[in-house]
Image 1 (cartoon, rainbow, N blue to C red):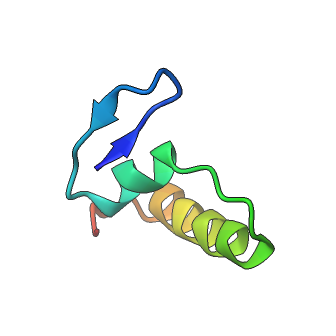
Image 2 (image 1 turned 45 degrees about the vertical axis):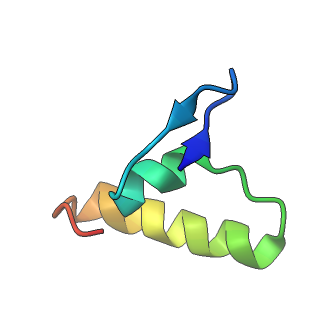
Image 3 (image 1 turned 60 degrees about the vertical axis):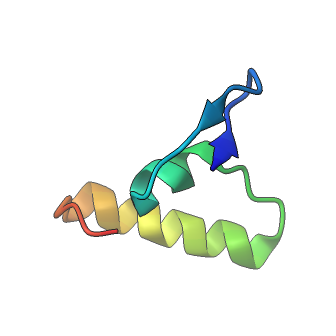
Length: 48
């Protein structure tokens, strides 16, 4: 469970959806998030 910018609860078991809602501050976390987003955009196979 995460919250969006308006503090509304969002529940999902899909990794790509969760990553879209997260805002990473740590450089390593940002890099991992960017890699996952890029892979999802390129392949788009729906993996979680």
